[in-house]
Image (cartoon, rainbow, N blue to C red):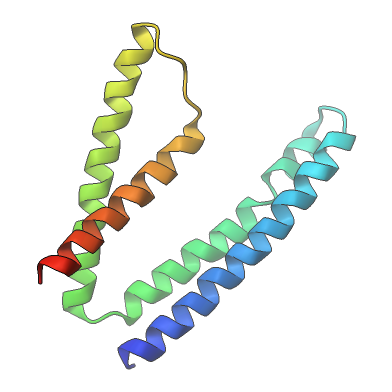
Length: 127
């Protein structure tokens, strides 16, 4: 499959799942506010994870479509991002022990995604 066609399919699948995620997220937040704490409320709060799994599926499909060189470069960028994120979270964990404010786990993915993007862009511009 040609690279442009593979990228087009990827963006269609990924952004489609993210659009569904946004809709389900707002719906689940609205609905969860009306429910008392219960297993049903917990299930409603977790509903946005279904479209997130669709996004993960789109990413996995895209990796299978990549040629070996692009796949290797992407996986190296992800590995560096994972290492930087691990170092940051460990460091911040020690800082929390020193009185810094606690951070939500929601920060982990944005940090990893940002580092992944910076590494990928840096590698692309070095070529």
